[in-house]
Image (cartoon, rainbow, N blue to C red):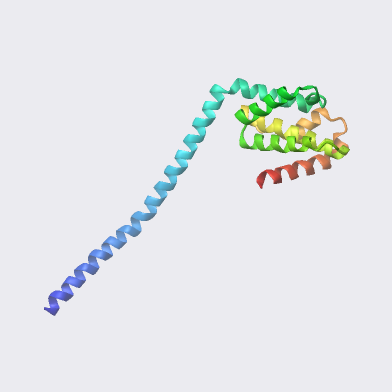
Length: 178
């Protein structure tokens, strides 16, 4: 009887050993496939969303980008806009811009709500607008443009204030990460 019991225990141990070995070999590949499927799904989803916006909203996104570009190249442009026009720009930015563009626009409009501005604060606003234009350009064309290059086109004393502009941009980028 003891002999049969030992044989039965040996068979059970061998069966569980083979099953355990098989699981050890199969589980990592199953996890790897699941991670790959999730990554593939996210990529396809992102491409589908991007394609939708490029097909259905490209002219709107282009209009939004051009409005912000006018602000970056004409300091008085925003003050010439009515509240309704500004509100429409905000709506279009939210509707067609990326998360980064929307967050930058939010920072910019929060900046605008502060009525008393020093000269440095006015320069800070220009940096925000250049960053928004750069972000929207990337949304629209897929090309990343350095916001400082946008500033260099319009600001004649850029070299004197380069450090301020760079610091302001780095601070804004850090705020975006929060």
